[in-house]
Image 1 (cartoon, rainbow, N blue to C red):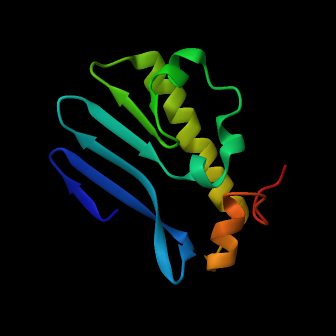
Image 2 (cartoon, helix red, strand yellow; image 1 turned 90 degrees about the vertical axis):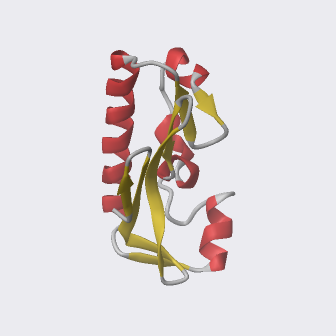
Image 3 (cartoon, rainbow, N blue to C red; image 1 turned 180 degrees about the horizontal axis):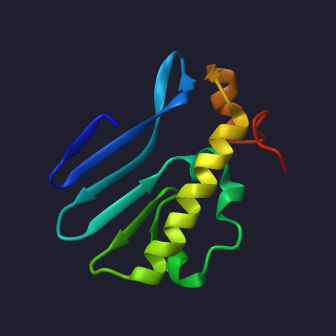
Length: 114
C-alpha cells in the first residue's frame, strides 16, 4: 500500500514490476461517487470473463467501476475478482516487465495463460 487516507487508497504489487517499479494493483477514490480501479484486469482481461451484467454496467473504461451507493452483491462479486487477481499475480510470480512485455500485454501476453 502506498496511500491510505480519507477518500484515497492505492496499493501496488511487490511481485510484478515495470522497468523496476511496482505496478499498481488497486485504487479507490471517493468524490461524489466511489471509483474502484483494479489494474490486473487490464493486464489479464480473461479475469473479466463471466462477470455479471450488473457489474459490467458499473464499468468505466477497462479497469474502473463507479458506485453512488453501497451495492453489497456487486461488492461481493468485486471481492471475488480481487481474489482472482491476487491469484493471477501469484501465478506469474516475481516478474520485472520490460517495455516489450508491457506492449505484449495489450496484445497477446507472454504472461497470460489462455
